[in-house]
Every structure is written in structure tokens, then in C-alpha cells.
Image (cartoon, rainbow, N blue to C red; front, side):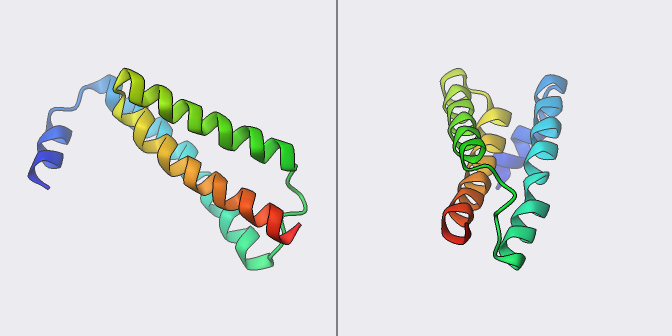
Length: 94
């Protein structure tokens, strides 16, 4: 925990902007995930859009790992998990 606090105390403005943008785009998935889960319907989603989005987010996360970008790694990992869950709902609930 101390190392994490130390990291955030030394964060530069570019990383902060990346974290902020990534956080907003990641949070954007939560309302749709909750709605899909509650209604048990993913009918309005295009299967191909979800597949491409999930693969794209995975690739962004890999890119973040390759360049060592904490904002890309963190936010795309979370977004990948959320989009994968929505994709699974789409396949399950149709």
C-alpha cells in the first residue's frame, strides 16, 4: 500500500490525464452492464461490436504493458473485464 501511495504522490500530469480519461471511459460501461444484468437482455447490442470492442480493449491493454503505461494497463484491464462480461451476457441472453 505504501508503494502505491508513493507512486500516486509522484505522478506527473500526463499520467494523471491518462488515468482520468481512462477512468471516465471505464465507468461508462457500468450503467450498461447493470442494465443488461437486471433486464437479462442484451438484444440492443451488436454481437460483432462487442467482439471487436473486447478484442480492441485487450490489444490496448497489451500495448500498455509493452510501453509500460500504467493508465493504459489499469483502465484497459478493467474495461476488458467489463466488456467481456457484457459480451457473455449477449451470448447468454441474446
